[in-house]
Length: 124
Image 1 (tube, rainbow, N blue to C red):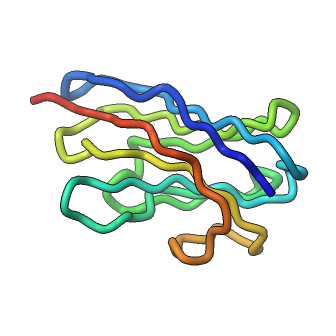
Image 2 (cartoon, helix red, strand yellow):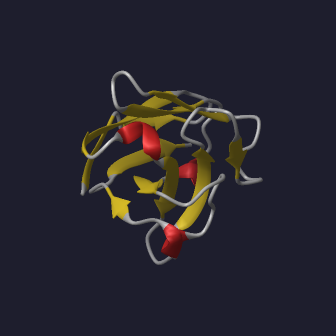
Image 3 (cartoon, rainbow, N blue to C red):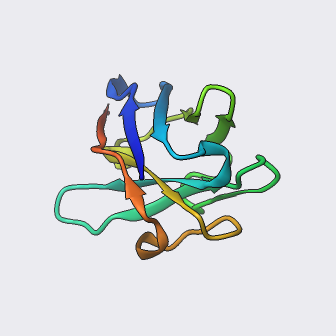
């Protein structure tokens, strides 16, 4: 079992930045590919980005490429999502997730563990 807790969400103006954190506890954090997803009201949960266990590979949704950066610190069992140049359409609840599957997994159903989510609201 892995427990995930997100933090760092909030209200920010368009063009601003936020950094989300996801702290993990339980089984060996460094064994997992970690992903970030988001869900806006009335929409399905969608992929934002993912990072492999050793930070060797990252992958991003086209909508956030060049603006968001995923990183991880295995010593702290924490994964981060740095969000720059935020837009109103980035408003959503952001979730981190963990999977044992190899590679930068973008499929929601392939993730085994999820955090409770943190709200990000971008005002225009």
